[in-house]
Length: 98
Image (tube, rainbow, N blue to C red; front, side, top):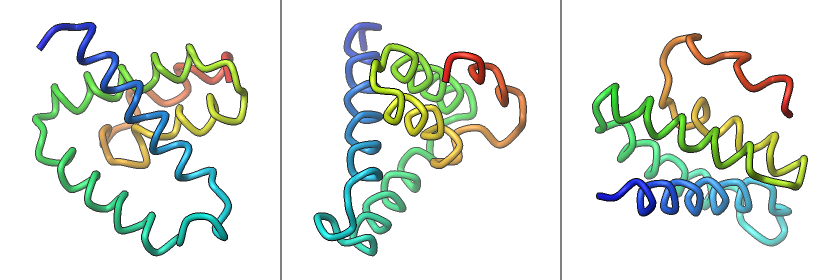
């Protein structure tokens, strides 16, 4: 898989997850969204630790390219929310840009 394809898919996924997360509960049923997110987390949890960290880095890069502050902030939480990093190795790395 090319780097361009991987980056594009990671950006699209982070944006979609963030859009769902920030959507008013009158528009998206929170229980349904939780089910979607749990399914995604389950699939991502099957990745190797190296791949999870790589995907987390791609999500953070996508967040840093995001121009909407609320979206950027929420996108920076995507790796942790999906359990991609089980340590504090990356915590605080992007705090100044948010």
